[in-house]
Image (spheres, rainbow, N blue to C red):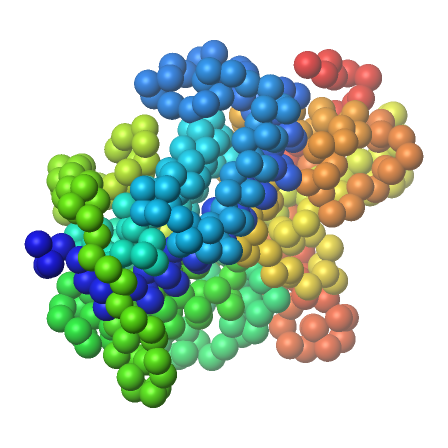
Length: 479
């Protein structure tokens, strides 16, 4: 059945798979570097306590069977090694069946981390990586032509991702409908990057054009993904350009990168090569019948599981970034259904004074990514993901987001916990832990062009309220 394969999409598969392997690599390195402080035995939300509460059927994971910090580190670094090998092309020089093994291993190991990751892994791009990674298992390698059905499943994933994000905006904040959301978004997004301030100060008419272009890209263009070529390539190219715009204007981990990679799998790269007078190489051989049967089985599975996200898309109570099964397959996506109009930041401070008073000198902890020092330029972080910094943004929106972990974070600062301090850019108490730690809520805004010239500051801030009252080292009991 020749219609089950499409040799012309071999280059698109190559771009998608290599890029996805690099994304897996980033994800596993992030996990290896941050897990001890966040999820380790002495972390802010320890995995051992979580797996005692949540059964395997609700959160299938290797760590349900066994957990130790050393075992988690082994899993994370093993995943990084496998991802690096696949990104280097190892899966393309082995037989087809053998090429599926590393992709399956990557999916299983990352699923095991996400399912015990709790609030630190509650972001939409975790499920997106798992769903795309699951489909990559069945895409074949350079020795065989890509399976047509799985290529269409990638389009279906991209459609749900973009169209769901567009619907959540139109149904959500009024500023998306009156085209004013980008008056605020570049300034109030979770983690601005070096160019975010410049985007924020673009003329307001251009911001309205940005929003309108976003609506077209997310609500109209996705239907073009199912059109014949070259229209599908045009739709994919529009999505790629939009994602590049988002990449240069903010830090959203690997969300935009995977979206662009999914769109790259739709592009007819042979036609592009012909236009550029380039040679793209011979077509791969047809896939064997057993692999075709697997592609059909996976398609049936995805079609069956699509009932829930489709129902969600047409619902007036659309959910954003939700998984409908414990394996994070065929979920629903979306982002920024509402946009903050003001930026608030939680500033954490410590002092050596055991009895703080009006004259107490407080020294500020500096985070790696989130705004703190007003003279520090927002850093470029993505596709790397600073999980604590992101949760601090949520904590500033509502103390409810911080309740499960922020008290423990303060306790660890009072003990100069090494793993916790590794998540920070600057510890103002390198020699001995502070006697007291507190947190205050500030309002932040980008400086105007005039303020920037006069002061050299990127941000202007003013205190709003006490967030966490002073906590003394002598008064806490570290678990």
